[in-house]
Image 1 (cartoon, helix red, strand yellow):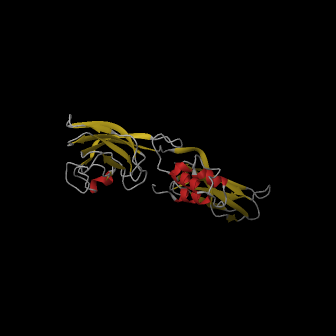
Image 2 (cartoon, rainbow, N blue to C red):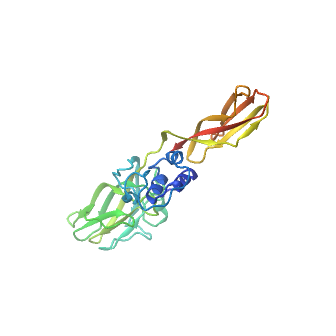
Image 3 (cartoon, rainbow, N blue to C red):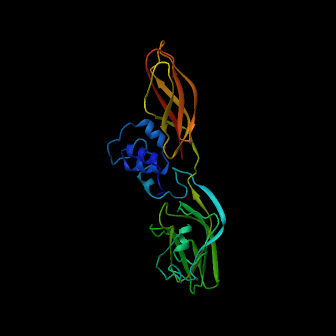
Length: 295
């Protein structure tokens, strides 16, 4: 799983079940929605939280065609990430029935896969799915190749069938990877063969600003003496959010009025206001930063 922001970790801590926590950390449930709904951690439960979307099966790595998150394709220039005909720890002909692991991200450059040493546009993170061209070559008998997410189960279907009548067979396909893992896929062949892997792009959960999901972060309550013009700051928007405005509460009355003459944003994270107490007694003011989730 990719690194979670403190904002998402806080929201996840409020959810009472494991499924909901994972969905918050993945961004399937907006952190702002949770924080606006729950003021204290919920009792731990085995059952799925009412906030959760989907079933416990959604805890597995997001698969292509996920019902909870649509995936966006990012194309890259074709990149040879692995070639078992070359030298390295993960090279050499695949023995029949013996799985071999490959990393389709930039992490694969250091794992002796026999591919390129760099690839423009290739991600360093193992996302949910990949566009890959798989070539089998150097085989001496009829066989088939199976591909599955790293650490997963061998499927009942093949990605490529090969035989001695042809010296090489290529097949372009979309593969489900292992989200956030140290490697991407496992391959197993029914007959000995070399394998070449070319990556054409990857799929990831779309990112962008959420729509209407905001939380107010309160600054420290300030006491403004009578007749004083004072600077008051809201709370700092945490990582994973962006400040989009601010608000204020105060102890104004008909004879002790608080006026605001200026407001703005500090360093992109905090809202501030200049306030004046026009009355004859002290008044209290709390300024809030309006923070919106960035998913």
